[in-house]
Length: 160
Length: 160
DNA sequence: CGAATATGTCAGCTTTGTTGACATATTTTC
DNA sequence: GAAAATATGTCAACAAAGCTGACATATTCG
Image (cartoon, rainbow over all chains, first blue to last red; front, side, top):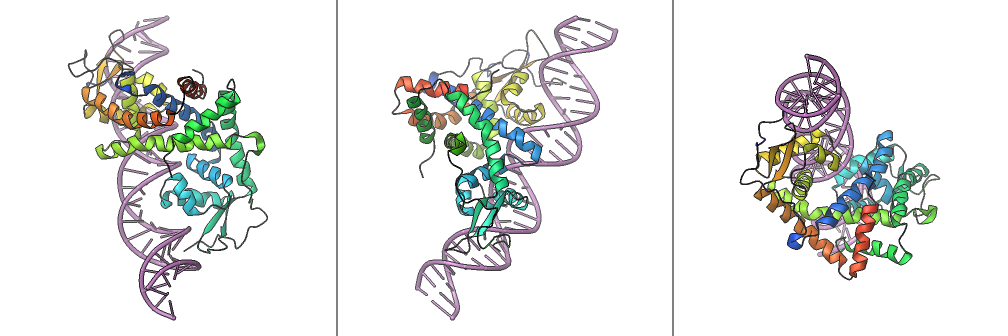
């Protein structure tokens, strides 16, 4: 039932003009970032849905592969989520043999995280389509120009 | 209880080397995109949490303000979510006076979406910190270089 | 008129985030 | 050496936002 809320024609409090580059706001880039990230994550999401994992698992697998030996605290700080959120997906990844925990040598309270061979392979499989997309998007850019993209992305991140 | 799963030292199936730029994969940019988007969304998230809305509401408010008069089908295609997911947040935005629905003129089945003044103001408030972040990240880039960023982001999006 | 389309809605499920509380092992501090 | 701080794990409950499947209504199209 196309709802009863719909008006027959715009009332006094209905704005019909687009929110454009007035107000000196960068709407175009805001929007492009949304679209870029939406499609950037769609490739690995499709792969993950087969194996019963989700985007949260992807992030953990990615970072543990990038920085083997990172502690749980490191990972929490990187992902900016709570340890209870992390615990759920991390446990699954450990139980299914994608990640190993090793007691810290200097500090035995720490649980240092390492990928297994299986974990390394999964990380690579997920990174491949993303890298393909990036390579394609960067084709046509000169090497110097490609560096600017990285510079921009880093500048978008909060300090610390 | 620091779990019993932890090994005392790396076993045979524990990979200790970082997943680096071997394998011709663009790990750096993959990672930078994650960090950039993580912090990019953190500003509006903080604002929204006060008013009881979430990131999903933000997206709807943004696009309805950018393209007033868009149909529900347009919005679904833009966000790439199901209509049941959209229905929940859209209803809340309509009920609380941020968005109006107007019956389509040519096709009366359509519900064209427009922001109210309140809706326009919210969209602006949410865009402001994001735009500030972008402007800051782009400072130090020449105008020609800034255009490259947009070109890259557009190239990251799936065709159509 | 019948089929297709645009939208709405009910019900239930999943993933991934949150808070709060508490337990254990280990290290650091006094 | 005892006490405090730290690193991690875990239980329970809840919330946001995605999903599927099924079905209803109004309108348009063929």
